[in-house]
Image (cartoon, rainbow, N blue to C red):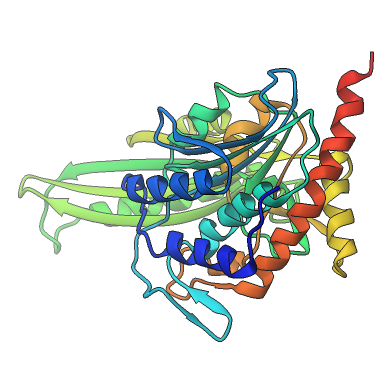
Length: 364
């Protein structure tokens, strides 16, 4: 077990946040994290997808493997990096370099049983529809438990995330004078949007609550004209519950659409795990031991849990310091005492989780 002070932990998250890493431009941050992992005793490298990879513990292929999968990329937008009154400001401080650094420090300072291996990953591209970093990991690992690094607050952990589907619609018509008898292409696009939302309202009947209904969000709409044809483009984002697969949603929208060119991306299947089991129990016990009130929750957004959960088929939850309402906002900031508390939670939970997993694997 490595010795690392609270100041070392704070320096790590400060320096990683201060290294820009918007999706597609993560290489400098990845290299920095790999270097810090090596100094903490990890067997660290950059994998073929460009992820930061650090392994610590047993090298036996049959060892209990616990994966701590965070992401290192951020959405665009510069927020001056500074620490003020115990708060770290900066893009990615919450989503999700704070959780990733908490994983890195906790795994390096935990008491790891001899038969256990910890794999810490800073994945690239999580903020994109294809999540290339997690997709690469999904196809090459089979951990016995997985923690996803996302802001939950130190007393909470997420057992589920909604799915997602992005719908890109294009409508085209002959150009015409605004004083003419025909409506504009923008009006047609708005009417199509209303029609699709009406269909979705029908699909939602019998389901209640944000997590169990399809949510829609008109993300953008724009028009253009070449003088002969007027065109409208719009993007509709869907947040999907567990009862509908994104490919089924695509099929139903295509059936409901008329005279519209459609393109779909970002197919992510919703996942909801149990509130009990070795991973929720280990986190709950650790949170309680530090005076917190452990709470299992579900999220209406998506994370790399959606990418790996079905393939891994193991206990999986999301955990990390930070207020998720600050994600992607110009006010993104991380409370550093909470960050240190989350590290303590993880440090206590990891050996308990390893102990709980080993008997399950050795049982006939």
